[in-house]
Length: 212
Image (cartoon, rainbow, N blue to C red):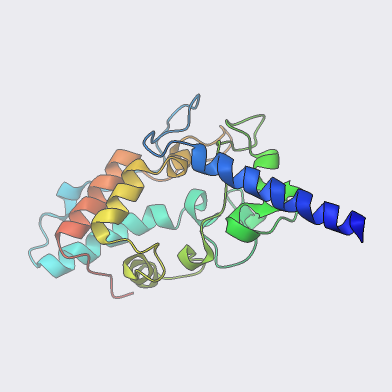
């Protein structure tokens, strides 16, 4: 019995220490340190949608472009509706078999940061506060419209307004990894600045969603 209690206390301590390390990473720095920022497949600029006269239709079209990034493996591998992340361009189940655990940081003995260090290392993606997106923020298999609706649902998006979503995209430290992956992985579409510009325009035009 004493041994079981000791093991339980050690597991709780490890979880608290891991959470503390995550919270200690400053959120104001938008790119992981020591990584090379790269651009992925192109995103259409905001100016490409200026010809859409109807504001609602332009807003929905802007989100259709945003969804190209949201549905890319760099985002989808962590924004999953399952209890397990994915990896690679083919979005295969993560190996070893890890689960999100309490706080989305993994479980005792196999926390995300056990393998994912402060920086990319020998092909393993790295960041000082590696964790999965909350399950409520997953959009595996969703259409553009469904992802858009999830983004706008404050019960599922971390209680964020469209303007706060923009701030999240511009400033959230871990999100910057999407454009700084190991060399064998393709960066998310466009650049972080280009995606933020599209989200800003989407929010300013009413944050309307595509029909499909």
